[in-house]
Length: 529
Picture (cartoon, rainbow, N blue to C red):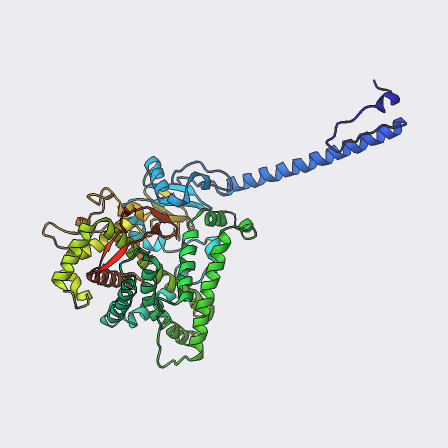
């Protein structure tokens, strides 16, 4: 036992609110010890409640995300963050292919919500085509919800989506999609694109944004009623913002946003760029709509925006259909972006494959020379007489694999698929990579081989597993337009130029993964023929 005098020389260890003291009487010592004990108890209480809160939240998360009975198998997921640490967003389609080897054609994974992943042509066709009505909805993802407010053509659902899709298809058809009237407009844009590439005078250059500008001008004419010159720096910057936003949306920051939206909405990071980029593009769309409002003539519609403004007056009592100015912004944005990004990325791949495989390029040019000649512009009527060129374009779409993960769906009711039960409201990914590279459907799936689309006599043949535009009720509404553009732009470019890599450079097929799969930046030389 220490007496009071001995205590005067004792130092109580710091921690738990302890004091260093040397008192004159036992009351002071006793008081100090009481303060120390109370402080220690307070610290223990704080630590206890923090631990309790963490354990509680993890328990709630585990309970909330517990797989239902007979749910597709998958890897064990960490609480809260799921399987984010298990995959690399820069090659997510390849990581999912590895999980397929372990778990089969249907499995589950947790990236934010719990997702059912479908693989292989037969299973995906069964889901998206045979049971199309059960897989027609889009999941509500926090990032897309914050950008589009569940509006537009791509991420809306139900009655609004049906009405907006019907209207968009009808309007695009009225303005020439699939008809000769639009073909002539594309041919004019082909001339402008050829001129812009010719101005490079054979010097090495990156064709990405000049091609993007050319393709984008077609949808811009349909939606905005105008095209944009290749020297328009403001429009070029818009295309760059769209390209970067689409890339970032496929990355880890976007996945974290969909997993922990409450936190990610307030913390800084690259995900903020996604929101600011789309805000800039939306402001551009709003300005275009305002300009249309100022000189709108209902009796002479010029484009999609004019037609939408007329429809707003016709169905003003049908609020649920979504014909209002806010939704006009989002629908116009969807058409503008979708009509610019995927087709231009396909052509970007096409030029890369032509410099990678000059023998294929030479055979395409020989067919163009034989069927079209050097002077007349290629037309859609030529396609039937150009089976090899048509096969090359299809093979580029297949192996380019532009949208490898497809756009996600959500089940509208409980359904049994592949022997497993998928509850209503489950997010589903039908992986297009597994279709376009299905080893049971393609002779040499991992090789660039135009012969996939040619029969023994050299005639073009269709393939059921050719599904770059997805399938079912959510099949890409711009498929007809994209097919027109790909044929006319591709043949026009190869009629005018021979493309080659810069001297001493070996072309690389390395990719850059976002929402779309695009080549890494490269340069080529365009030599006039």
